Length: 376
Image (cartoon, rainbow, N blue to C red; front, side, top):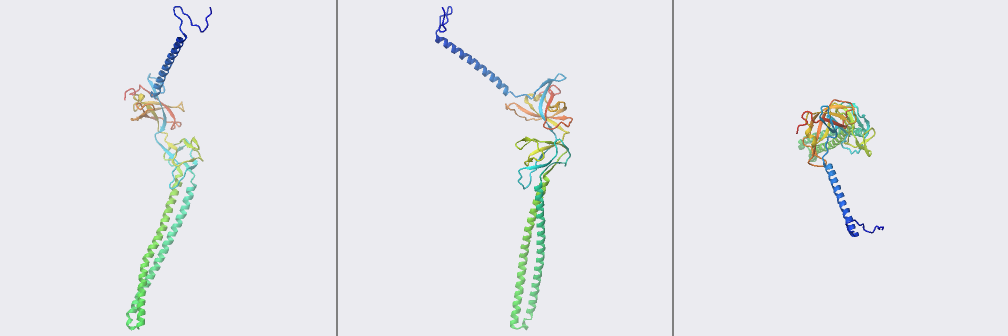
């Protein structure tokens, strides 16, 4: 007899179950498997989260040295021990948004102290300096003319005072023979004396007032002359600032700056905002490599430890190095405040024209060499 799918299966020794009981069992199994899957997902997430928050070691590659020790490789960048940054000049007394480069020394050029590195367009400053110089000369001539006029006016006023004094003396002599004169002539002589005395007093009083007025007008011209002269000096100083010269002997290195909507190096014809450091002069004779050391690897390092430096850009170059210093304070890690990173500085032993600043470098250290394995 054929059984349909709706009929319950009959197992020997077990009574057939109802459809409701089977459905309940089926749902219970699905819930169980769902809980198992959820538990697996939670476990995997916890493992991944623990790996994510675990501080990453700076030991990006581990190898075995010739002596059988383990090599600790640190990643860092090269830098010059002695370098000077070159900035676009800030002009005194002028609001300039950008400066245009007219002359520029190529990157990698060897320069001496005092050599011209870059020149900006300084036509406005030179023209302003010439105009102010002409105005200063004109005002200086006006001051000289005013002083000459004042000397002439002073001499004239003194002559008038002497003449008034002589008139007073003459009038006084006439008054001595008043007894011999008629009444009318005596009154005229007295009036002449009074008039001479009044004229002399007026000349003496106005003499000082004229001198003060003349000195004030001359002082105004001198102030205008000095102000224009200072403006001329500012313009000349600004014109001199437009020519930037090397502060030390070294090699020219361009900085990457934001220009024309993207990042790049400067070139002739570009416009640079004042105060932007677009270039630096470095001394290639003394170079160093700065690396960040994780707290886990710190106890492998000590001052004076030898290392080998390789440049990522030039795989055929390698230099010896010594560990100069390690930052004693350190900084908080990226994922935990309890784990800190420390900056270490390695001095490069040797030189090469290709060894320039801001190159990525690998520093290999034998962990077991010297006192590197001692705890700090």
